[in-house]
Every structure is written in structure tokens, then in C-alpha cells.
Image (cartoon, rainbow, N blue to C red; front, side, top):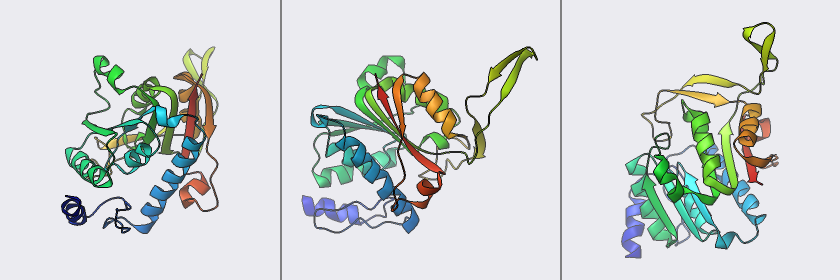
Length: 250
């Protein structure tokens, strides 16, 4: 059975470079820079989990689990992991590689994260929520971030592209005498819903770092920590064009 699964895995190109049981990597059509990005994300995920006592007794949730690369990593550390993904073809790929790697503590669900019924939220809640690489592909990033923070009982780890600038100042509200402070900003960009790494629509709102951190605090994180970029990290993290933020519930 393992050889059959291995042959199936090798028969298609992957977005990620999974380490396979025989020591080889999955065939991938991703650019080396993208593979470096994946490696950087995983290294920071591992570093955060190492600082969480008793992770093996906790549950984890991977939002937008794609082909399961980070879901599999979560499965190495947490007692139970659930991946949630919009695209059926990504779930099928994730289930295939997860079975090959022998992780029996993982389940996958197909779901539009912007259309989660309130009655189903309890079944998604987890001690640790991972939100990697999705916010900057969405028309409604606030809605998803609010949901993700609500689902996280203890920790949430968010990775996203961010705007290269911050806005500050005040906005009038009905009169020049009544004004509100700008807490952050979002930039409108076109997205690519037809591609496997794109979002579900053709437009997206990319947050500024200030907006992301302010919202995570507003949505229930008692502490919000920006992960410092390491010397060997992907260059976007070193330039601050992409960030990883760890939110901790009180």
C-alpha cells in the first residue's frame, strides 16, 4: 500500500516539497523562491510551537490548508489537527500525502471560510489556529480574521503580505468637529481565483501591519507578537513585506 501511495504522490506536481518516507521530496513545479518561503513559514511555526507547553495534548486548526503541508507539520506536534480548505482538488492531494506520511490524527473538511454557519463554529474551534497565506487573497479579510480569532482558544498564528506603508491621522465623521483615528489601512489589489494559490474572488484587500495587529487585539488577543525575521529567512520577511504575527489569548 505504501508503494502504491508513493507512486500516486510522485505522479503529479506539488506546490510544496514534502519529505517522503524514502528520503526523497515530492516533485514540485514551484519556484525555488516559493519553496524558501514555505521553509521559512514552517521554521517559524515550529519555533512558536516549541514555546507552547503541552502542545501534544492540544488541538490545532489549519485554515486554508491547501495541500496539507502545514497541516502535516501541526500533526507532528498536536494531538488532533483539522485542515479546512475551499478547493476539493487540494483536499484530495492533502489526504493522499497525509496517508502516505502516516498521520492518523488529521482530518480535512471542504468549506468556504467566509460562509461558515454559526452552528458549525463549535466543531472548528481549536487550541491553536493557523492562518497562513490567506488574508491577502480575500475581499473580506476582517471577516475571516474575526472568525479565526474566535475559533482560537489559546493561540493564533497569522502569516500575510502587508502593505509597504502605514497611514496615520484622522477621518472626519459627519463634521470636522467629530473625527476618528486611523488604526491601520488596507490596499485594494487584483487577485487570481483561477489559480490554485489564489483566493475565491478576483479582488483582495491587503492589510497594513498596524491594521493586522490592531484587529487581532480587538478580536480577543491579549498579546500580539510580531515574529522577528531571521538572517536565513525568505527575503520578503527580512524586508517586512511579509510578516508572521502570534496572537495569545488571555
